Amino acid sequence: MSGSQYIALSGLRARIDELDRLAADISNVGTAGYKGEREARAVAPRETFDATLQTAIDTTFGGRRLDMTSGSIATTGRELDVAVEGKGFFAISTPGGTRYTRNGHFALNAERQLVTADGALVQGADGAPITLGSGDVRIDQDGSVWAGTAQAGRIGVFEFADPRGLVMESASRLRAEGQTATPAATPLVRPGSLEQSNVSVAARLAELTTVSRGFEALQRAISTVMNDVDGRAIEHLGRRG
Image 1 (cartoon, rainbow, N blue to C red):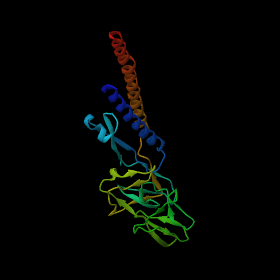
Image 2: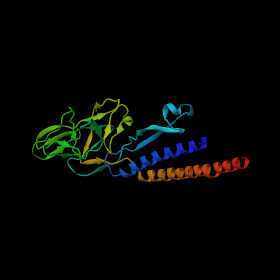
Image 3: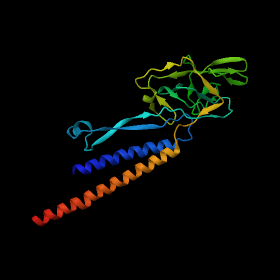
Image 4: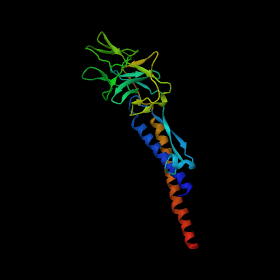
């Protein structure tokens, strides 16, 4: 296979990854606290194909970074909905360990513990679950949770030195790799509200159009090289023989 074909194939692979990313962003436009991703590319020198990729392509995946731009905050009026102001994250307990989220659509489980929509326990500022007694539920702007006149705890809000380096594990659940979460010095939450996804549908659709056109152009280029150029080379070589 010629070098031009390898280059075109690497471009196709890059655009397939971009299409997957765009599809994930568009499908999560309505997910509270969702952060879009940006994808990087890395050059794979031909001299090290065997060592790095075990295949012959010219570009490879260079990692993804979260777009930590804040989404708009919408008022819901629901007493267990909470939005983070600033760069903080809620901490939740999962079977895989502590994870982080900006999605504050919380609920109470059968034990009256504060949990996420999928049942993960919300950690308090001390790392423990928050269990509420009886009475009307109220959440203050500092994250304090009340049941009637009794304070049940305070929702933990944590920050990272480089939040863009967090790894997306699901639509609104993030994993910290190589980073340490530190409690926010002055946590501020907005009760009765949710942060919306920061994905712009118009921007993603425009990007999707560009990527799709690039994909089609590369397909045509590969077809031209394989069917026309290679075909003519074979025809001329056959005549010489």
